[in-house]
Structures are given as C-alpha cells and as structure tokens.
Length: 345
Image 1 (spheres, rainbow, N blue to C red):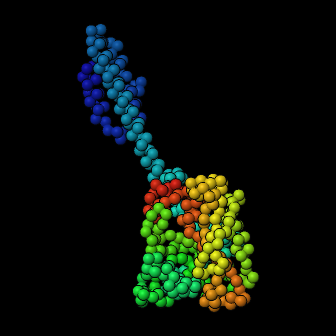
Image 2: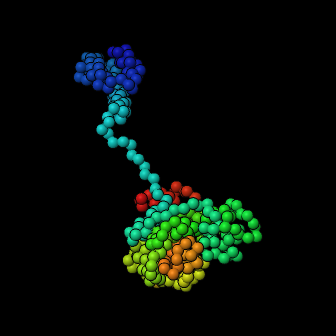
Image 3: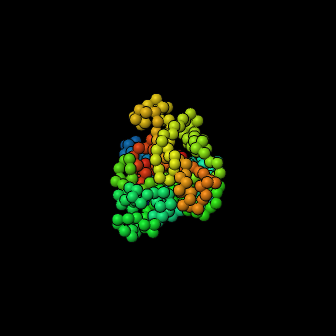
C-alpha cells in the first residue's frame, strides 16, 4: 500500500495546470476514485501499520486537493480569455477620456456667450504685416508698441522706422478686425479669438504667447451705452448674475473714448481679498468706441457709421474662473494640471 501511495503522489505531481479539473477529481477524489479506494484498503491494515500509512494517505489527499484547486483556477482563467476573444457582446475595455485645455474651455464659453447675441466668429493669420497690426489701427509711427522690445518682427525693412510692409507676429487680434472691415460693409458684429505674441519676459504674470478674444460692432447710431450693456451681459453670463461692472477711463490708439472694465471679485463678493488686492474689483478687458481714423483707414464712412470694440485675454479670464494665477501652467502641458479639467468637457 505504501508503494501505491508513493506512485499516486508522483503521478499527481507531474499533472500540468492545463489538465481538466473534473477528470482529475473523478479519477482521484470521487467516491470511486483511486484515493478513496486506498482509504477502503486502509481499514483492513494491521493496527501497527495504520499510523505511518494514515499520515502518508492524508498527505496524498491534501496534495490532490491542492492540485485540484490549481487546475480549477487555470481552467477559469482559460475560460475568461476565451470569452474575451469570442464573446462580441461583452463591453469593450474602458476608455480613459482626455481633457480639454482650460484656455480652450474658456474660449469656447466666451464664443458661446457672444454668439447668442448675434456675434459671428472671424479668424485671420498669426503672421501679419505692420499695416494691419499697427498703421490702420491708428498707431503713431513712434508708438512704443512698434518697438522691437514689444513686437516679434520676422522681416523689417528698416531698424529705425517701421514700414507698412514689415512682417511680424501679430500682437493682438485687432488685425483680424481690420481685415473684416476692409472686406465686409456695415453692419458688422464679430469677435476674433486667436493666439497673439509679444516680446515679454516669461513669468507667473506675463508670457510671450497668450490668447485674446476681441469684439467689434459697427452700425449706424452705435453708442457707448450699447457697449456698456453688451459687456454687462457678458460679465453676468460669464461670472454669475450677481456680478457688477465698472468702467474706468483709459487710452488706446484705436478707440476714443477708451475704457477698461472691472468686475466685482467673485472670490470675496466685492468685500476685498488678496486676489483683488482688497479693492473688490478685478480688471478683465479694455474697450472703447472705434476711432474715426480707424473707420476711414478701413474704407468706412465715419460720418455715417460708429462702433465699439473690446478685447480680453483668455488666460486672464481662465485665471479668474479657475483661480490659477500662474500663466506658465497654461503652456507647460503638465498632465497633472490638465487632468483637473477633464470633468469640464
């Protein structure tokens, strides 16, 4: 009997995991199996041989049960793999969604707000000439914005004086508005989103690349009141119904009168905090009535038509909306940063 136990242990040890677990159970562990037969023989052994034989027989049964568990697990894994290949009704593997860039999210929201009140979308080249970026927008020849310190020039005819044919990276999307005014008769109601470039040192508060949305409305009898109401509508839609605005005098070559618009701080509700520098207000855009010289430069009769224009930095709006105050984060493509906006798609 000891020889039978030894042979069965050796036989079981060489069985591979790919074997059928049910066949194994029937052969060794069922009531009519080989191990059960050995237990039947065990009853007839003399008492002096039962202790040694019983220990070996129990060890054989434990090894058989362990082998059966291995065979069952192997068979289950094989079944799962087969079902993955052949069961076409199973759902696919989960797809991990990407995330839209926060600048894209804010840009789309701004576009949506102005589209609801009739503004169309205009786009233009990022590489422009001096005529569209500066001259037609009433920039004086000596204006500091034309200097190499502020503008990335690609081709410049003279280092001492700017020429209309100079080629540069646009410093604002107002160049798109010039092209619209030259090609489209009034009434004009359009916004121009896009990327712009300025020769500035990169820091938490400034960058050489950023994005703008500029708006333009030209028609008969357009007034500053129309401008204010349009911007108030935008502020309420963007920052909430309790938002208040204020307009402060400013200067831009292409508008007269010119102003800058602030909104009540959405962090403190206008009471004052470190974000708004305890003023209760946050500047978000510049605006004004289109200068008559700009209308005439673009072939529009300034005696018949008037209009307003405004411009805002998209990163600035994103900073206010998401309280992310370092501009560099918007350009570093850090996945840890971008993943935070996946729920906002």
